[in-house]
Image (cartoon, rainbow over all chains, first blue to last red; front, side, top):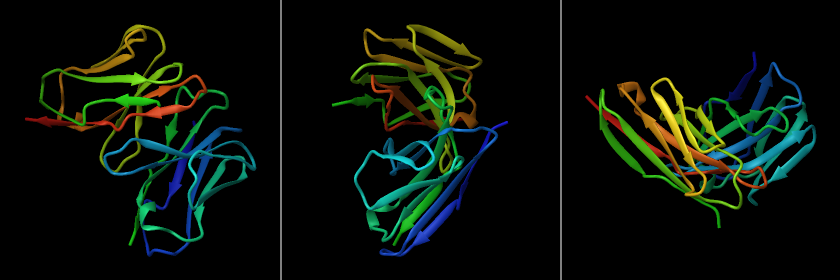
Length: 113
Length: 109
């Protein structure tokens, strides 16, 4: 069966510090991978999605970046965090070409202070 | 622009029935999802509607009217564990997911 792992679960970082969130998927190959952010009381905002190794599409211009060094690994990074980067970050995957069902990781609650 | 509207918060009583509405204005339509999200946790899939009508799955049912740009999620025999946020999301003509802000459902004994 397919599983998705996302870590860490919670993170408190000072403004200006770097960020690295990691997500891995098991039990499937060539998945579509997504990074979402959810601000308190707001809908999910798509940050990045990837259809293959090294292929990253950015939906929102910001100081975050994403990388997919391996087929089932998706990394969200920042060189310098801003206060506005605080939120709940979710990694998700879907079968390639099928967005009809997204499977989410457990999420990372990021607080930038 | 694209927009998904759903009530911010609803309150219902344990054992009762509640209907959560969702209206959408999107560039095209390729399906509508409902997800459940408990506080601090990831959303979990509840239903997917692409054709008009009612889809029933146990205590949960989801209805879609494409002509009206309208869907609802119906929860029967409410349990305390149903207290959560319910997210409506639509796939547009570019196969992008557009998310509503979610409806926080509070269940009272």
